Image (cartoon, rainbow, N blue to C red; front, side, top):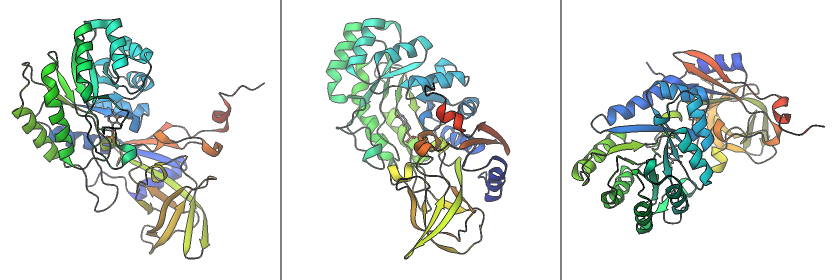
Length: 403
Ligand SMILES: *Cc1c(COP(=O)(O)O)cnc(C)c1O
């Protein structure tokens, strides 16, 4: 039996909680996590969910409950992870371009830290020397990922310390006796090609021998998930085989076997999320039939920002005859979700669901046009729980100075 949420179930949820509505299926998250742990059973691995994909604390709690760790992109995400009940040892802060004060805070909270600039590495050395273990985020100069906006490891990227600055890193490590326990790379998102990860590992093998206290290498996230029929995805089993091979062939010269870390975001939560919307108006213009829905890029920006494809289904007319529709939002800005897309016949009032809405969906939403952010619901073992209320007018006003 499929664990995906059925159109009937989604319809019931929209009736109960209103729309637009984000729905997450905890069981799908669990299943994706199991796919990873099963594939990598032969390697000492640790997975950190890159929580910027979706940070609702109920989702974080679920992730924590299934034994997965959490990777954070800001000090606030670190605090959310701890608030959700994670222990500091299960939380990783992979920083990028942050003020040193956030690194100090992360250190006080006791979480793992990856530092991504020579400047912060030096400040860390001055302040803490060898007394707190730390990781280094490297830029491996590898082109990877679905498109330029989501590519982070290439030689023009702002992320990480460029590997060609290894000498400068080693000078700081020596000067401050830094206890470097982790080396990190994250090359991008939507990486289908397993060889890209292998290339990253190969870059690391040249660097690993310089770090005597190393305990882990962190290969980041970016596994590709399928968004539409026929879409490829990262072959996790092949990746596991290749990673094992690579590490078997390069035992750590400093003795300790290295643990392999990954930071999957999308892979864990993308398919587990559904955005349910409703059709406000149908409009014809020449050959185009617009379906105008009660949402926009204020709720799901990926189609406009990344040209991302999200499968759309009319769950009010599952067996309707398919025709071509251009699905657009209701904000004053061009917000086209799909152009001339074949979808079951659409009528005003119908509910359209966007699939793969779990990652970078609600999380990138805004109040643009002073519209409300959607509510969020988590389904666990078939039981639905409201995990975030829909905004109300008060939410738009509460931080403004009224007098
Ligand atoms: C965003 C991010 C990830 C996760 O990327 P996905 O494509 O969602 O898997 C992992 N690590 C770091 C450092 C990130 O910034």
